[in-house]
Amino acid sequence: MNVFFTDLDDTLFSSLRKHDAQQELRAEALLKNGDPVSFSCFRQRRLRALMAQGEALFIPVTARSVEAFGRAGVSGYHKAICANGAVLLNADGSPDQAWQRLLQRELHAIQQPLLAFERSLRDWAQQHDVRMWLVTEEGVGHIYCVLKSNRQVDGDGAAGPADALGEQAAQLRAAPPPWVGTVHHNGNNLAIIPRVVSKARAVASLWSALQGVHAECVSFGVGDSRSDWSFMNLCDFAVLPTRSQLALNIASQLPELDLC
Image (cartoon, rainbow, N blue to C red; front, top):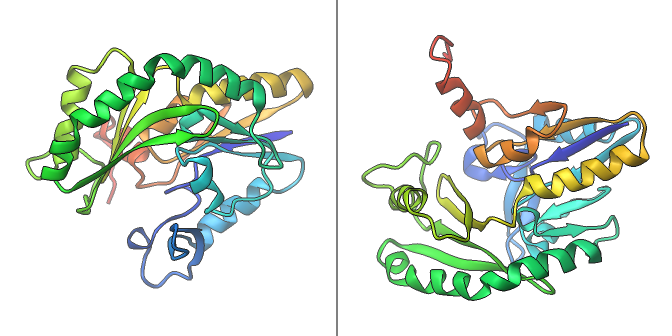
């Protein structure tokens, strides 16, 4: 049996600006008002089709909240990992109650620190034209903090003079609050995630359970960003889009490669 643990955004679909103009696109995810915001190209759809062939399990692994995941219209999954691993959905879309109780208990102690952290950055966010919110799930509570620049940022999100999010990410990595486990910066998005929350932790739990049921399993980790490597590294094989943040990061460590 093949098991595909796969990221969604910038892996199976992307924003319009990240696609070539001549490609035939299909809307895959919607904004709250119903407008399409993410699209798939032929190659992304072919990758998804490959995951559905034969005896295979498809398990989305996403930072999206349950509500945002629902607006992506993803179907045919065995389980779904949402909110960076804080929520585990069953095939019918219902939350896994055991996982929910575990994360609710562990996140309880940092509800106030999360709120205080968000308050501490409000003036900075307003000054730099940055939207900010706490990802919150019913039955779990506040999970992690998201900052999103209203100005488009190109490249892999490296800090620079005009990149306020990059500078903020660097400061947080240098002196993180004690509850912070991951500071993830990619383009115009910055996520500050508690230690108890991770895609890798959720994938490890599911992968262990599947191996206990199926004698012969092969796992594939699919993703585009540096933060995805934490769960991809747990799988037998890693699959990543070329020119993605993760691919470019790997290539930067191999200067002899010709990327022309």
